[in-house]
Structure formats: C-alpha cells, structure tokens
Length: 108
Image (tube, rainbow, N blue to C red):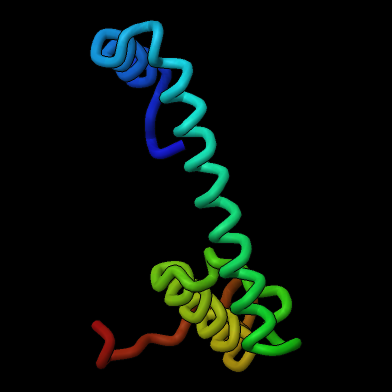
C-alpha cells in the first residue's frame, strides 16, 4: 500500500500520537476512514458511470486500463504476439553427420 512498510507506518503513528495527542487521535482516524471510504465510493461510481456511457463493448473496463503505461504495455505485447504468429521462426535444415554447413563470404 503506497510503498509504506511496517517501520514507516510505526514512525507515522508515533508522530501522529505526538502531534494530535492520544485523546484526539481516534477521532482523526475515524475521519480518515470516512475520507477513504468516500474516495473509494467516488471512484467506483465514476467507473460505473464511465462503463454506462461507453456502452456494452466496454463492460469489462477497469480504471487501471486507463493508465497510459498499462495501455502501451498491452499494445506492445499484442503487437509482439501478432508478429510471432504472422512470421514464425524459419525452419532449419538438419545436416547429416559428415555434411559441412554452408559458408557465407558476406557474413564474415
């Protein structure tokens, strides 16, 4: 979650207790919980509204799909797969035990 480990979380908790005091800390935690819940509900409703506006062909749309990095990665991987399907590896000839491989003067 946000790249915060247990030691960082403990430091944040100690600073919060020192700054806000142990009496007011539970109320601030409740407010923070309400804020997170409201933001989550807002994101879910925006996602639902976006799906409804775009139509049935985008029914499986996720907000993570709108991340440009994910979209580029997805399209690059699809293009690479298409290239592999369209142009498979060439077939190699198997040489007999005493046969020498062909020599290309231009390649060396």
